[in-house]
Amino acid sequence: MSKALLNKINKGSGDIVIRTGDLPASNTTAQSKSESKPKATKAAAKAVEKDHHDVHWSYVDGPGGPENWGNLSKDNLACLKGKTQSPININVDRAVKAELTPLEFLYRPSQLAIVDNGHTIQVNYGEGSNLIADGRQYRLVQFHFHKPSEEAINGERTDMVAHLVHQHHDGSLAVVGVLMTTKPPAASKKYWWGSDEVKENGLIQTLWNNVPLIKGKSEAPGVVIDVNQILPADKSYFTYMGSLTTPPCSENVLWFVMKNPIYVSEEQVKNFDRIYPMNARPLQPKGDRLVKETKAN
Image 1: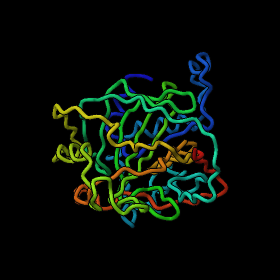
Image 2 (image 1 turned 90 degrees about the horizontal axis):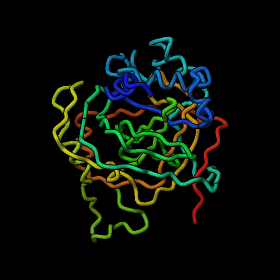
Image 3 (image 1 turned 90 degrees about the vertical axis):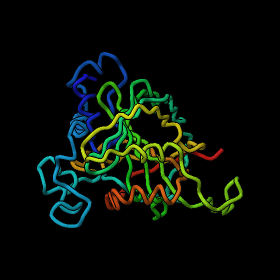
């Protein structure tokens, strides 16, 4: 991946995508030939390069709202006519239980670089943290947030979601969705500390403490963070082929949605709400797409 592309990705691209279904083979020769990349991979990579806070789209009903994204630019046609758009509702009873390869999260601490890009709060992550998915290694580039969660499970959205965006050296992208909730586990109604009140997540609080005062401005406050703190202990997941959830809505994106949420406090959700009360795209038709989930042991 070129340094120029990495710089553009780190500027704050808004929302992102994960895909592997038709990725190029991990053969070195194949990867070295730009013409071997699927067109969808090129389109998705181009989408990541966009500085989304300069694009006149929004989550508010009206000329720039989700129903009109496809009309704002010819580059956004997939938002209007795409057949495998995201986010979707995941019906657990209809998901195929499969022996899927576990995701390997090889993350390490990074200096905090945080930006309010006009659509979300985004953290640009340092070099050296990787995801291994389907035998392919992707570098963690950035993560950002939506309220409520964009993806739904059995018709229900959680309070928020974190999207962790990764890129393979051939340009293909992988995104992991981590659901965030303020509700205690349904089975116990209480947490191990004997209360039904959710404690704040330490990493989330650090991020909110350091949100820039000016939109579009990146802050590097000299704080070290560890993204492992927003991963659930149980890393089972759902996976399906979808799209970017923001313009240009490029398709052929492979999504991993963690089955188990992480817990955040109500005050932490309220603090994000004060900046972005709603920044989630409406659910899109699933169509005949297959959703798989990791099989219970």
